[in-house]
Length: 214
Image (cartoon, rainbow, N blue to C red):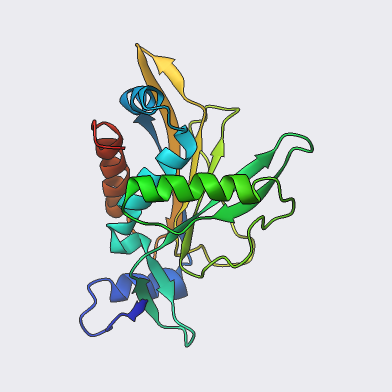
């Protein structure tokens, strides 16, 4: 469900107008996530890192309205009640990638089972869209596992930055006995400020550091 924002009571009305009309500005923010405990947790439970991590990112995003923003058919801003991850699948044979997606649910076991099934069912399909029927309420998440980077930027030529977040993470490195992984959020300034993106990254770090039930 999409809930349109009432402009009269919206605290970000001027910010949204400024960054969609005056300066169509977006930004990318890269930080290092400490995935040491999360790697141990997934390994001990025999879980795949990718769907487990996508679940954690999806959970935090769905708890923050700024990262569930969209535009109605008549051009009015609002928030989706839920957004689903659209993630990339790499093809080793021809070095191309395809997008797939999975419906988000707060129950980890249900989400993990569904995403692993979707990866098995659609993972070998070639082309940009491996799975058809992607819902309009989505966000993007992908991995660059061959490189540990310190910055990453996604741009849209001659267009406005996306209101939905684009998440990119890379290869982790061991520093002082800890596994640190680069993690980038790219989003329109109209949807979220640095404050909100900092909260998002800090909440993801907090979640993956806990010994919660997977």
